[in-house]
View 1 (cartoon, protein in one colour):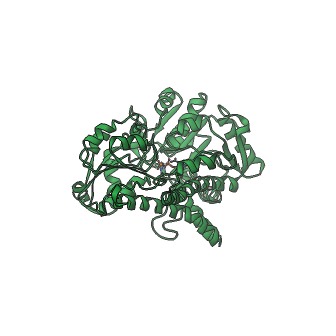
View 2 (cartoon, rainbow, N blue to C red; view 1 turned 135 degrees about the vertical axis):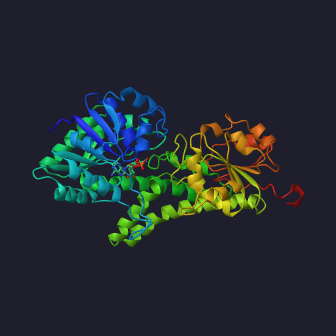
View 3 (cartoon, protein in one colour; view 1 turned 120 degrees about the vertical axis):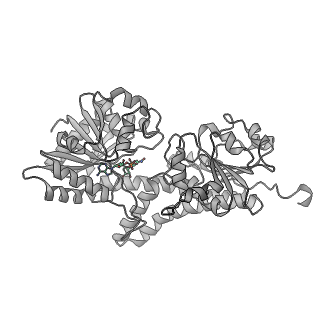
Length: 477
Ligand code: NAI
């Protein structure tokens, strides 16, 4: 099979950037060019402040940028030069038309594919890196073959990415597995072997698995559905814990010791976020429905519904603890990213919560160590509403530190599990001293030490633990 010498990656996002930077770092003999239509994003990749925050990413990029790693807006040139092209563009949920709210919008994948067909002057291996519905490779092949110059041959591979934001570099350098799907033809197998060689630059051959294209495509949707389902399962149990006096961390611990269940990814929270889980499950729901499998669709849809329910339930708890009204009260939101160690806010539970708080007419002060202010304002705005910023500013402020956000607040709400919000890192005595009394803390991530905070004087409300019965004075019980 062919040795890959030049790689092009279309899409310099959360996946294309880190993935291809690691490929370049581990394969100094391969030239890797990451391209994007978004010139600002490319300029940022070429600057000292990379467009995404990810621990360890700066070092990787610095080690090979300008050597064998390049970021460019010249898509044509990169396609023409490359033997292998990753398509790593966004595949958001459709917002309009057929399948709106469920189906993946494949417009970006199609347009990247057409671009490849239009400019390619020689044979290419085209790799689906984006998460796509099962059988997308077939459409890509059809488009490529219908538009290519005569005599050019394309091989299509599926190579879904399993990295998690916040740990992308660690996940990429030490993956559980690398998955490559191909047609079971000599050409398909040979293309898969070429891609496998690229990963073998640092990944054990045994962890590079190959299978048929459709299994590979579906495995990515399946993996995300299974992961999200674990979170919704433990969150469903957290509701029972709150009502009965059980403690969800203890339940999770007890269950997780069973090796068939396993302890990872069983942490209750205010709800999962991120650009992928919801989108990919909805995509699976849509696929199931198109295949006339309504029971299967309903089963997976419930995972997303439980997640919405969890956010709403958390809000209801805040309202009811704060004497059934939030009007004019100050709520400090600690953490706006969808999880720690990323600046990404896509589908973050904090956004939903802030929108609810807006309806309750609360004053909200937000602090996050990595999310840009600009991004927070964008996330708070309703799509299509003009001049909303002034309106938003009446209720929302963005604070430069956690302490600042909590000043004068009636309640502190931990939305993201950033280490700096832990008891050991944040001076909660100071936080308490500067808050309105009674001072409430709602821990949506189960990172706080309840007892210690109660000793300071806080009323502490943890997901998956019963409500503290502070409102009933002792002699009324
Ligand atoms: P992103 O939105 O951060 O990046 C996509 C980039 O592609 C954008 O910068 C966009 O300008 C560019 N683009 C779109 N069409 C283009 C075209 N025709 N030519 C050149 N550039 C183009 O998206 P992200 O998060 O990197 O996701 C990409 C894919 O990877 C999605 O399908 C996603 O489901 C999947 N994925 C994402 C993971 C994550 O943690 N974010 C993890 C695993 C998979």
